[in-house]
View 1 (tube, one colour):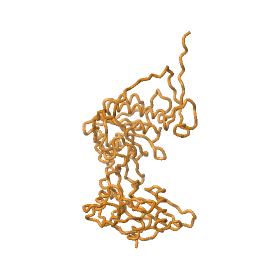
View 2 (cartoon, rainbow, N blue to C red; view 1 turned 180 degrees about the horizontal axis):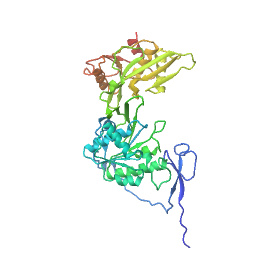
View 3 (cartoon, one colour; view 1 turned 180 degrees about the vertical axis):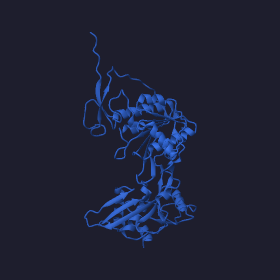
View 4 (cartoon, rainbow, N blue to C red; view 1 turned 90 degrees about the horizontal axis):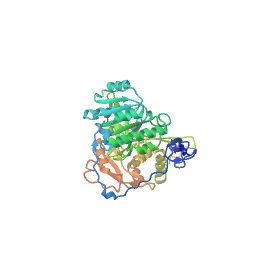
Length: 451
């Protein structure tokens, strides 16, 4: 009797971590996420083929230096680490209307003007919409090829042979052989996988645009971010013309660089002097205002910290922060109370970093504490003084990294006093235009500046 053909098997894959289960479960056993298991069908076959490969020492692997291809936009190159990489896949995420397509159109125009073959594939906008935007912004797209298509095989066939590729967006394409609608976890995973395979095989720098969720994360399965080489987030407030570009993942460079743009009538323009953007260039002494010099990657920025405190009739005072984490604010308030005797239990406290800057640098602690103490005691600080240092739970002021770069930026902006840790080794060249105030603790700093 002829042997009956084996049926295809059904299994379930987690859209977040890729865990595979042979039975349907509500919670993924791999990552613990609920409702992320989706059904997929696999062809039945015989025994799995086993192959062997010989291992070799890492020292025997030949290494070829990666060639950087400039994008033509300095702020973009800063975040990428110098430019595009052949065969590198970049995932660019951001809110609708923030300027992702505008940024990529400008990058495509710069690449095309350098004599490279560029293809922009759009699955969301029509050719007329993209052409109208390019003409309105004055972007020269004469040598940029455009394809409006949502069928993945057609898109991949057209992309072969180009030197730069943009896919806008990864959630808008669909593979007919895969179940689900465009944007579903299985479709996004396959679109990204096949696009990355084409990029690696032919050495084409590829940028995939991704939607983001309400929580600010890139939509789709989490495995999408693991499949690409670089993950960029483009952000900005609707009420502001400024846009920030950060790298959340970068296999070819650092992830702490910050690109700053301004949306103008001619598209996105790099901001030449970012410190002037986040500081109002005023040395007026105001209670609750302190200036810190923060490092964003290799670039020092003057950050204006604004603190406001007011009495509250409620038993639980309010703590609100913009630009820093609320937990960081509560920690520093506790240090001020325990180590300096400055109480905030009966006050609502509000902290804002001017200009919409988000501070992650630990060396901003000293400026935040100075602003909080100045507001709670209603005593202004000297306007020409900046603060550089990290605060520990014991109230000690710790040294900051690359202090000489911070002092050089403060000198350029016109500051005359700099409060730093007493353990800082400041050379004479860095302190030539400064009055360096060295303090060992937050209590010592307040004693010297708020007499």
